[in-house]
Image (cartoon, rainbow, N blue to C red; front, side, top):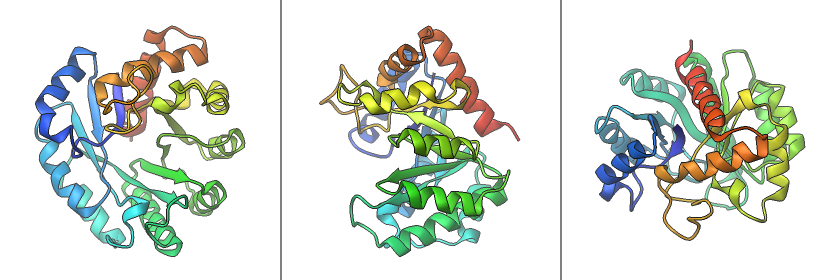
Length: 254
């Protein structure tokens, strides 16, 4: 298994990282992708990726942090090229649910991240909340075959997923798909092709059933894998093989 999106620099994971990694390996996890959200976050990620061979990282500014963390294309490219274990750009995108950053700043940052990802030819990890139309229009406007799109913790509509599939997007399922009230989302994941699916925890957030209410960690990803396998009507081990191969294809194929 591969946890395609976790935040190992967040507490309580960071203070217990060795045990978290150990539990991950016991559950059969072979890679962890720890996601950058700010310039300060990136400093910690550079330290974390050296803690174990299964850990990789990204560089990016979360939509909530764009006001306080301005970046340019050159900065992003230089940061990524300095370390071979930084394999993606993000998380970036648009979040209009909260007003933590101005819309204009989010859009500008998003487009900068898109251009950097295209030039580096590595995946773009996207956060989109209450911004389906804006997210799609920006991606469509900037799309080329060099843009590798990964919709992290996808909770969008079926129509949104269909539009994104036209841009060859990948979709990562989080613990939200295990929630009882996520009927619409479960139906959406049923129609997304298996070859476009990844799994994630977004830990320490969004613990899946039956661990809901606890602080999430990568080892809990098995519950998301089991639920997604049920939705896709395949055996769990096959779902794990599909999502592992999809991750490696997305992040490690030129």
